[in-house]
Each structure stands twice: as C-alpha cells, then as structure tokens.
Length: 257
Image (cartoon, rainbow, N blue to C red; front, side, top):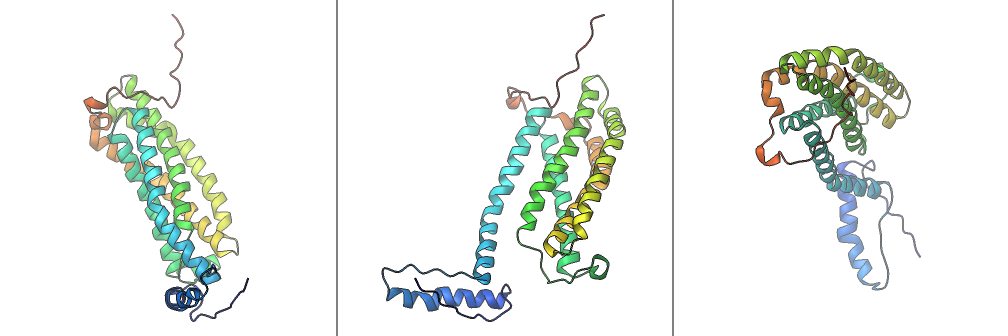
C-alpha cells in the first residue's frame, strides 16, 4: 500500500479546490492507474470527502423529500378523509422550511448579525443542515398541524360549520401550541449560543423556523386558508371513498342516558 500526498490549490472546499480535485481524478490519476492494472486507486482528504459528501446529499435529497412528503400526504389523507387537507399541510410546512432556509442564508451565508450571534461567516451553510432541518422541521410542523386539525375535525363532526370549527379549533389549541413553541424555541436558541458554527446554524435555523411556524403559519395562514376554502377542506373524490379511515384519536365514549 502506498499513500501519495498531493497539495491542491484553493482553501479546501471552494470552487478552485474542487476543480483541482476533478483534474486530479480525471487527468492525473487514470494514466498512472493504467500502468498498475491490479492496483486500486482512491482519492481521500478534506476536499475529496467534502465534495463526495455534497454530491451524495444532492443525489439522495430528492428521494428523502419524496418519501417524507408522500408519506405525510397518505397519512393525512387517511386520517382526515380529504385531499385538500394534506396538500395544504404540505404547502404550509414547506413554507416554514423555506423560511428557515432563507434565514440561514441571510445570516450565515451572507454574513449578517455576526456580532450579535458571535460568529465569523465562512460564506456557506454546512452541507448536512438543509436536509436535517427539512426532516426535523417537517415533523414538528406536522405535529402542530395534526393537533389543530384534529380539534377542527371533531367540531365539524359534532355539527359545527367549518368557519365555526376553525375558530373553535384555533382557540382551544392556541395555548398549548404557543407554550410548546416557546419551549422549543428556548431549547434551540441555546444551540445558537454555542461556539461550533455547525451547531449554531442548526440552533438558529430550528428556533427561527419553529417561531415562524407557530405564529405566522399556524395562527394566520392555516385558519385563513381553511376559512377561504370552506367546505372544500373536506373534499374527497368518489374513487377514494373506499380508502380505510385512520383516526388520530379514538372517538369519545358516550355515557348511556
């Protein structure tokens, strides 16, 4: 076994270093490897590891997005017997995730609030963070969403109109949602105070996204869109009527009179 150290230009993970890595792999190594037919040649190091990890994340991210969104759509479809509810939930949850991405880019990639948060921007967001934030935030957002919609659906099933049910559901869940959001924002904000840039980015992104999701998305966008859609919230095509029904909670037991 032989190890050959080859210095590359660039700072290790910028475009210049990646071009040098590609040149090494495409133009330098193949002629040498051809002279050693029984040898296995691989390139390692910081630049190669970062580049290969980034490429893997780009290739696998669509699969993760498709799996999470598809499973969420199916579960909400079976739970609430509607195609509108899962579509709206996915759109609203993606808004929360998109807001988190925008905040991360504005702060850590563009270099704003460096003095306030106590960091020096390296001009990038850590590679693993977008996919990590998507999975975590989508789960948290769906938790809020199902909790609120369950109360709304219960009110509709009890005979309320959709408008009254939305008002009722938002009112009785506001305290719980707000309290849970404040706890999570406080916990995530602690990560934002750490010296590690990766953990700081994760903490700030999670805290900002949960705050936006629990206020603007759940308290404003969710009830307003449900009120605008009215009875269309519960639309289910006839060919889907045979789907099994999955309840989030068991129906209340009625005492005999």
